[in-house]
Length: 87
Image (tube, rainbow, N blue to C red; front, side, top):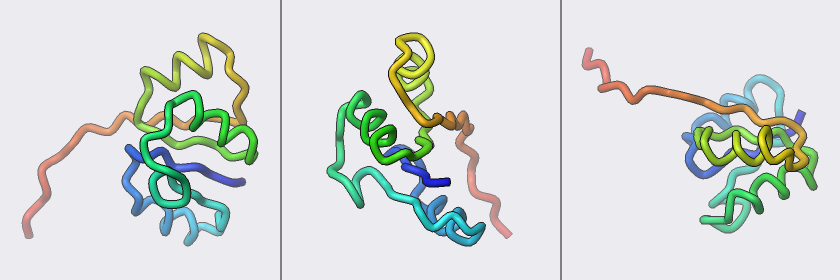
């Protein structure tokens, strides 16, 4: 599997995916220009046969599931921010 991390996803996810054996991870804003339109990000993921990982559930949910833009999969994270735990 190949993944594309949206620029709103913590980039530390890439090394974690590498450690699991997924060597095909690219990141918007690092491997591609930052601030691409959501349509461009989804099209790029589709062209490169990548699963998009994003926290932007409103826009990508609309594009992929309501407007039926072609895609190879979208993983939508809904993470609550948490204060760091001090030890």
